[in-house]
Image (cartoon, rainbow, N blue to C red; front, side, top):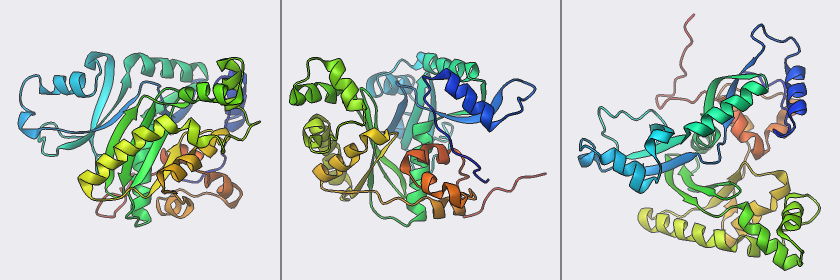
Length: 320
């Protein structure tokens, strides 16, 4: 696969989305829709590693209890998949011989709303993935390709929730949703800068007109406490030290956040060069796009294109 172009536009500007799609595909297809592989980030998405009690798997009501007591969701209102935490393969409920799984899903209402938004924009999703899951899979594969031995903290920072993961070349090793996000930092901005209301603070926080680097330790104080607790638990359980951090889905305007977290945690930020890895996975990036594609914020999109290598090292052959 060769990348010909990379574009971005705000989902809130429908006319810009429509024009961008028209430029990418000038001749409208007969169906009226551009077929696409889509990575979505529903606000209430579920991506959670869990250790199953294999002896209880055949007990009636055990899985229902996992959903209600551990994951705190209403099962009938969600679309859910179970995958192995190491290689991402579908979990075999018939065998039920692996205890570490990842539950992936989203509320049915959120999925329907995402599909409606895509269709309204002229996009027909041939495949709709949770972008978080695709990114985690690609990161695990990237760390294996780089022969990295360092457990890596991966943060998906949203408005009201931060999805925290610890990954390595062996898979997703820990996960935790933290009820702290960007919105929790706004009152701190208001207080520290003496602004009259939260809306003014929110606009300034989301703009590119103020450098929040110096204020970073104050803004992340509550989030940092939760992360230190998660990391400490993982390190005691495994005897391994988390050595680096990377933030996914982070606006360039908030780039200071990753550096502040790394500094406060006393770890490095992930040094990232995806181009050799992409080449090894048969995704070609032309020289004109190499700088753009090398920015981590595009990694979620690139992860949708990658054909992962099975453990035997062979690529699947397409039959004609």
